[in-house]
Length: 89
Length: 129
Image (spheres, rainbow over the protein chains, first blue to last red):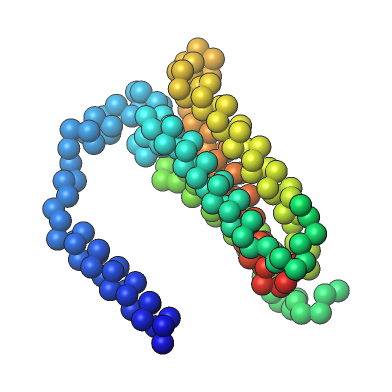
């Protein structure tokens, strides 16, 4: 019962967020996007503008993203240990 | 021989392994020019370990090694991206495309190890280790 309620709440939240996002008129073009698409190849040598952004223009973001993944994996490994058969420190 | 693996499953996993590997390596290697990149390719490569568990559940990869490799590759990414990405030493020392390629490879290996480690840990937890 409790799990069903939680699942329904999460589903409602998802539908609400999806509805809000679908009604928003987010700009699909802009000066920054044009600039990135125009200059990615000459600036970074990457034909894929996404790679140019995440490995060159926003490389700190990528490093911290990798750190975030590392920390969450360490947390998962730490919490997913059986306490009664814990033989390694 | 282990008791609960069917040979059909083992052979099937063995058959699809090369294609998964090829797809993951393609995503990582072509990350600078085609859709893909280190994170996506690493996630695809991690499915190799997961399907390997389905075929050979009694021969798990060493978790300590995966953990160590992941940490080492994070340090490597930190050093490499700081040296070549931030200070823009690239044109003189290293071509920019090579920088993108190596950074993608580092991220791919790191993500692959991390996701495999999480999967292996969940398997170990569920089987009471």
